[in-house]
Image (spheres, rainbow, N blue to C red):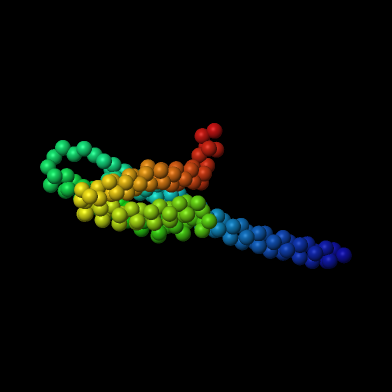
Length: 183
């Protein structure tokens, strides 16, 4: 009987050791997954922060571009200023667009941010083409139509970009649980 108990004790000890080892392996796997998730989470926060920054810069450039300004200088200086502003706006648009397309993988396909950014990108592409066309072809006859189109572009800037920026900010706050931290 003592021999049986001795064998049983050894078997139970081996089973416990094996079970402990198995649980340790599972914990290591879980820890590894959590580390990957944490890295993804941190990267996603950086992506949202950068998207928001690029979108605000784009908003500022577009707003300045489409807002009627009184310019006190020569017409040549005015065109140089507008050309540089247009180039700056296109650059900020391209930076936002490229960054977004590369990093949209950090969002779910059904995420409203994805849908909103895609709509904005399409609208801006159309607006840039329209704006560029009209910048180079102003005539007195078409001035009212062109002004109306520029006002529509201005409305897009005033309404749509701030909505997207707010959505990005809210998502960022949600991910870092700002509400829980500040309470």
